[in-house]
Image 1: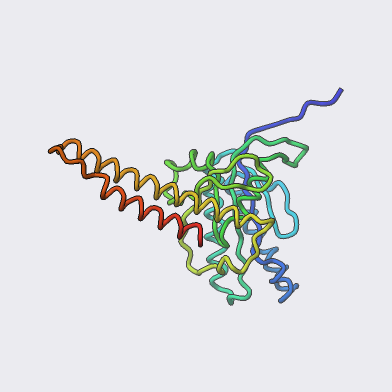
Image 2: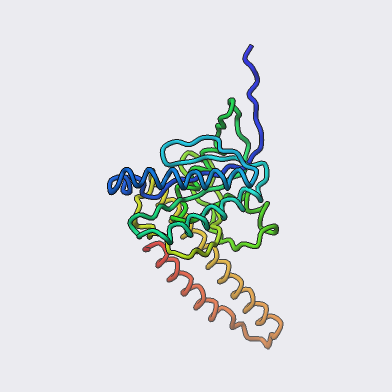
Length: 253
């Protein structure tokens, strides 16, 4: 009889080095030394936040936390620590990480974790900016009132190998040194175009909601100040025209 699969709900933190191949091509020994130092710093921060390193492969790292809040706090501390250390290095030697945090059900296999929740944490990491953090909707719902951080809603985003669109939030950070531009990397597995589509869709939704609000307000003013003249549709047409022009600009970008 097959043993039942052990499952649990946990918070996953996925981290990966930006442009690791480029760094290795420039200086293999120096890059490996920096990776070892940074990875040790990250592992210590994870331990101090009561997390556990699940595995490391190449330049990536996966950790789990019992607390969603603590996991995001750790992610923020990691990125701030990396930024401080990079400030002391020349730009071509700086090592930046992307981080993704997800909350979900996983399958437990000894010390390893498996399942869509693990895959989604890795996908969030791959979509993050260098030095940045992306979190999933379930993580945001748990931390939005518990942490003094800003969050930027990127909208529901199509993520490779995940059936439904995923609501994604960017954690707003300040760092003492600017990370490399996003154009320095190629989008892994076509994920960047899906993120761009999700962001454009979100901006279009927000523009549509704004236009509808103004039109509804004009209609209400017209009705409550009724003098026998129906006039609200003229400015409403102007608002719709502006919305259509913005939609065209968004999808041409």
